[in-house]
Length: 487
Ligand SMILES: Cc1cc2nc3c(=O)[nH]c(=O)nc-3n(C[C@H](O)[C@H](O)[C@H](O)COP(=O)(O)OP(=O)(O)OC[C@H]3O[C@@H](n4cnc5c(N)ncnc54)[C@H](O)[C@@H]3O)c2cc1C
Image (cartoon, rainbow, N blue to C red):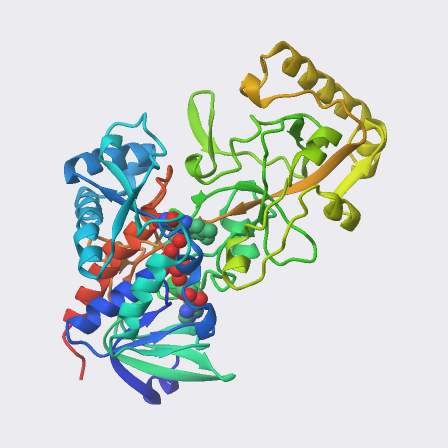
């Protein structure tokens, strides 16, 4: 930050909100309703606004009771609870509980969706997950409602205008340097700046730096979420938290020609298994494939851990499974949401032809084609078939009715890659949604909300991120608007 940047403010407002997802929209609505002039910066063009929020399942975790929510949140955080202060826990629980009334006030028609991901954790009786109106989950219904409320406010939204740097003067954040049409502009914030620009899923370098065991992973959501808020926070001395926690990984398929990963489909035909780089099984197949299934965490030796991904991972299956139904889906949320739908063939033959699925007459040939040790792959298939025939998976406890021998030639292999719905880390915030410095003090006039610096540190309950966006978005917007204006 240079003095030149500070002296040539091209725009001025009370509150700058950076990023137009649920967190940013909530902060902007709240600040605007509190009487502040609000300018929102959004990196994406208008038709791609909404980040992960728009393409998400649009489900909101609503705890029925504040005290039970505190117990459940504490159970979800486990050992990581020691860096979440008691006042933050209280605010988190209260804010999530208050969401329902706030959303109903905006016109939400709350319909309950059955999704309690950790029923065995104390406090789980408080879990309710809401969607807006009847129908399938997702479908952008809640996003459209909230975006409509944002558009109804006098908020100046600048699209294709990414924030690049925060401007700091005498310790306080006083503005933002953004980029528009290839040049930088300085925008002054008389009251405060709110960071709501999402996670770092689409920044492979940050992913490799902060996340263990996931050297290659693809986002299910917004390609615009490249960790800019993490970088901007670091530049002004923010402390970071929860950087190693993600919602995922979920084993998916990534076609070379398509930017995003597709979820896989495991039809109720069961002659398939997953193997890792050494051609052995590493999991109870099926468990890491769905976000509704503990969001990528699996139980190992009595402890929930992130699903290990011994890449390259292959799904091995036989002709019976090939003919049974599609093993891939059109469900790549970001793409589908923006009109690009890949229709997977019902018999998987188009994908075999494309080379996405490798075919061979024998297991020997299949192993050779995909570069796995032949003897080991045959041994793994033989072992799997023995378990399938015996009706008991002695290695991974896959349910007997979900196993069938892989025995009908030809044989197939599809390479799987992990994907994830979001990262949770970013600048640490406190119960007032203030960004906290490495020295432990709030950075004056800097707030944050949402997935950037999320409170989720370990286990994750579906609907929790969007709930947090609303809860802390309101706090950030209210407090930013209440800052005394600088001269
Ligand atoms: C497929 C999928 C399903 C999910 N389902 C659910 C669910 O049902 N319930 C739930 O609670 N959570 C769900 N999640 C997670 C949840 O959607 C996100 O954590 C949450 O929506 C994040 O909201 P946000 O406002 O913090 O960020 P986002 O909604 O991602 O918005 C961030 C915005 O910031 C913009 N931006 C980035 N960098 C800059 C910059 N430098 N300057 C300006 N703008 C910038 C981005 O373009 C984006 O528009 C899901 C996620 C995915 C991908």
